Image (cartoon, rainbow, N blue to C red):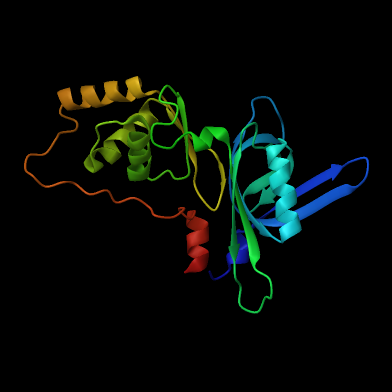
Amino acid sequence: MKNAHLRMGTLQFHKVTRDTTIDVRLWMDRVIAEHEDGAQGRAKAHLISLFGGDQEIAAISAAVSEEGCFQVAGPGIPALTVTLGADAETFRASMSVPGRKRPVRHLVAISKELAMTRAGGDPKARRTVLCSTTPSFVLYRLGVRFGLPILPDWSEWFHTELARRRAIQRLIGLGCEPVLVSGAKKRFLGWIGHGLKRRQIEVPDGPEIPLWNIPRRFDLPDEAADQTA
């Protein structure tokens, strides 16, 4: 957690109603966003993680459900106006901090598209938003979502195929290195079939079950990792 404040961003929400003005500014430790085509300074948010008090978190949660817009900024991220869109999901938690009488509230909001990357979610989807660019994580998450017959040893080969076919692109990220993978289940099955026929990948003999080695938390960008050393 050393120098954690250097990795934090900010989220601001401003709304003027007939009876009152809401102006909330909170610390943000994670964000995943995607630039909107032709919209300068605007992006579609897929994940926002932030901290604050009861009233501030309640205001942001309500704004998410109302498809409100937020201003976000952080290390390596220019100031952007973002929205999570329709049917976004929110999750709340509390954290006790030594020296504080009241717990800190934590809110995570995710877009419908990110929520649908769960197992079996929207099996006809052609886009998958992922929070890490690690090859094993990418292949594992696609396998879980689409029910693909995959093995851990194929991770580097599959990642190379994604890059060669221009089916993977970086997204805007704070506290993680998110990517967007383009392709449907049928397309990925075709790649796997061709890879096996050409012996670029293979199914090993023997009863041993290969184990997945995937991140159990968000990857830290290289610069942030250096700061924690």
